Image 1 (cartoon, rainbow, N blue to C red):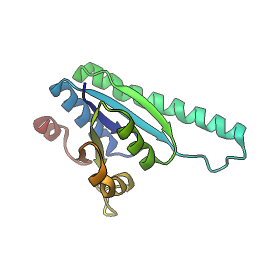
Image 2 (cartoon, rainbow, N blue to C red; image 1 turned 120 degrees about the vertical axis):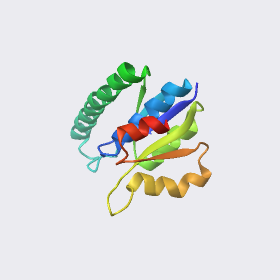
Image 3 (cartoon, one colour; image 1 turned 90 degrees about the vertical axis):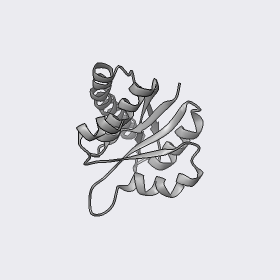
Length: 151
């Protein structure tokens, strides 16, 4: 089954990327894989603190994921899969795409700020020519109705 890989982060545009991935998966018989990346801790010498911070980050991710997962299951009939990785976000996204042969499309939300579409979109766009899958950019300010009409 082809999976739409979507990145779960704290950005506003993440919501539209999630919606798009779920709607496309529902209409094409695919799945959704939600990836969240925990960045490396700055204070590695405080291992006990780092472990606690890592556990708290995982808990926040799981709670955040459950909100999206419930919507996907209830409204789109899609049961998403959560993957949590640790490291540099761009490196980990690229690794997930390359390591999971079922990932067929990378879905990212593009920010609407004057500063640009966001760091993930900017960095991954540079690598897009060597990606083994297509990348779909979903505008962060696209309406829910417009998303429904194009999926």
